[in-house]
Image 1 (cartoon, rainbow, N blue to C red):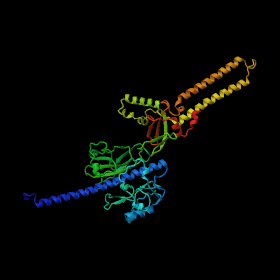
Image 2 (cartoon, rainbow, N blue to C red):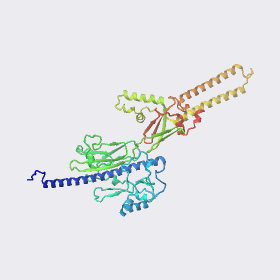
Image 3 (cartoon, helix red, strand yellow):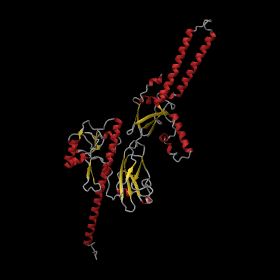
Image 4 (tube, one colour):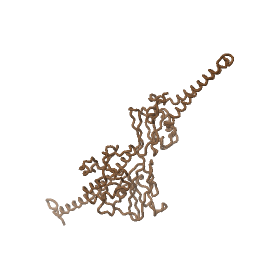
Length: 481
């Protein structure tokens, strides 16, 4: 037996305790190291996705690339820098990851021009390019494919890859890479990734060799989460989380771009397959606008699909329409009535379809009708003048009574035309009041992009006809005639 003396524990006990502590420390260090590697890989994927999305949006909006300078970097020069700093073997690794759509011009991305960008890592600089006196921040974009590359890559050890591969851009193997788990014997396929811009995407898990009518699906485990998740992270999702647990055959409706990780576990063998899908074609950024007094312009923009049209309605009509839509939603016992208090919800789900007018069309109709009435008045005056010249009152050719009747008819025509003109001006009074000085003339503007997302502005802002007119290059002077 190990005995305890009066001065403390025996030497054997102390040695055993030290050995146990060292073993636990080694395991902890190994686990921490593995965790850090996974975190670095996930951060790398997140950052490159974020920059790629922002660069493409910037290019769609401006037609130019957000670069630090106009000086292009030859790809082979870039590869030589990598070979000199990361090892000669990495030069070929870097070149092997180029896109087939890449041209030979590469530029350093100016992150300061990418609004709303948030990176997980800020240290991925290009020291060798700094030495070459080229301003940099670590990310390079190809002019042809808009694909983003880095000089300082990330090493990822996929299943069966003991040495690991360094990645300098996003590849399918990196994004859809697998951790060390046992895969199912049959293939697992993710379908439904949109090719065109949509407001949401329905993706499904498919096991080609198995039917939906299989009786034991309740024993299988299907989970998903947003982001490049590990097996451990997915297994920690509780079964009570109905949002991230699903049944085979169910569609997953996702509303934002990003990497989605799918987890499938077979009940008998316990084998697990993890698949990742990178969704990029969801229009999750609604249009927005910037209003300035200078020049009275409205600058509407959408960083993803582009603006389809701009419509408007007077503030009073707008408020009345919203109140009616809210009342209809509430009286119908609709469970979503509270959600429909959001104005853009009415616009998007079909409520109040008369809420907005096509601006250019309304202006054109108004000016056309106004011109027709004014022309009719001019023609009536000219016709009456010619009649008077050709029919003098002399008691023989034209009697005074006949002349009086003709004049009365002429004045009646003019009165009808002027009444019609006044009614037209009253109907479009908000167009005549260019500065929006009253609620009857203030405007609410609705902007919609090509994916169907809408944006409303004007309920609390002073918007006028002149803002829209200048935005559409409509001659304001024609409204003042």
